[in-house]
Image 1: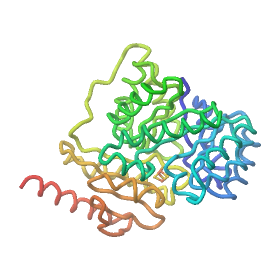
Image 2: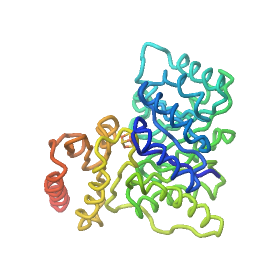
Image 3: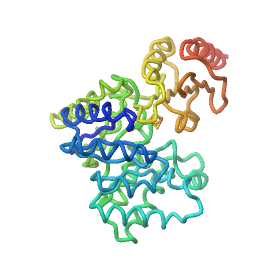
Image 4: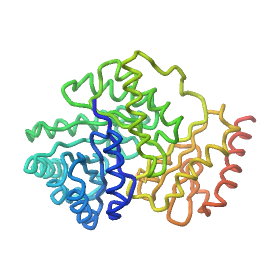
Length: 354
Ligand code: SF4
């Protein structure tokens, strides 16, 4: 079982990214994922690859899947998100896009990961399975597997991530039931700040590992870049505890849930990590209430991935956008947003007490 992680630094910041990869590799990360979103990121990755040849690198193709050609010679695995692939270059049929990725991967001896994420599922599938996110995620993965099979590309793995541990368990069990031959990468997306982020991940991964499901894993934690090694330690601890027969007992339901992303090269202001921490401290008084607060680190995925939360904060360079459900409350400074967050939280609690 391989424990892996992802660089939270800007890929273009070559020195910081090399340092991040070195730290994760030395902590025991069997694979380190690096995001590329532009030609400048590809240039940086060429330098990074040369300077740290010992680490196994996997690349996260964010919105621009055509960059695969530039980065495949530098890495051993390419991860793409089916939801993003759907949105980009809509004139090109999906099969053609996958054929392009498969040929590039084959030419450069790369594996692929079909990385399905609850916050960015192909909207056609979301519409086909209204209110049933798990079915939409599983169908997304199965349909991509079927196309890759038809294209005779076999070196792929799948991940089905959600911020809700129960949905991660259900999605992976259902997928495994239909495709036990496909390797699975396990994780809870946006698990949040430790120790809660680790507990949430354990709640999903332990039952799956007990069922013999999973080949690689990641514990996605909201911590500063220089503490990212904690993701590896947490993953190793889960595996060690499982080997000793020790399991987590606490249930995750009906409590205040802070969902926060682990950060990646898209973070515009690293203060978002501290903000997530402050949100947790501020909202302790509401911990017995079934409320979800999401804190996201960028403008790309932040707006969509806060949609399902009762209160959402997505962080830009100089301000934080606060949402109540899907509605934007406003944009606030990093210093003042907490005051407004508390007002909104109190309003929700008062409404529920009525
Ligand atoms: Fe990266 Fe944005 Fe996702 Fe956070 S929400 S992990 S910053 S893409």
